[in-house]
Figure 1 (tube, rainbow, N blue to C red):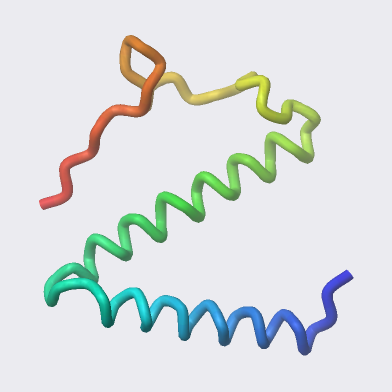
Figure 2 (cartoon, rainbow, N blue to C red; figure 1 turned 180 degrees about the vertical axis):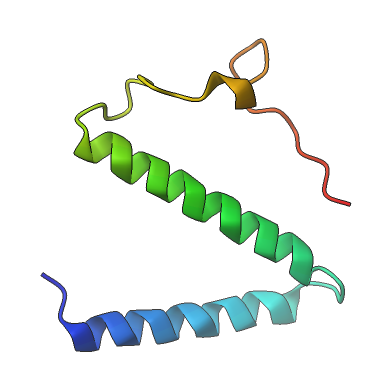
Amino acid sequence: MISENMMKRLKKAAGYQRQAILALLPEGMEGHLDVIEKELKEMFAETFVNAMSGRGESGAGKDKSKEGASGNVKKVTIE
């Protein structure tokens, strides 16, 4: 199990990582990074729930509304 101190350090490191990525992106891209971060968190949560429910990578219970006809994820336009 991860100690509380280690969790704080990991959270701090993630904050530094986010700042480093923002420093590399052109100005005005912060909103895009927020959208990407939100999507990654949702993907992680979905994967975690599937793993805990025993569904794993089988795709059971997968939300097909986000997928195209070929099974690939549809492109999202960020304005």
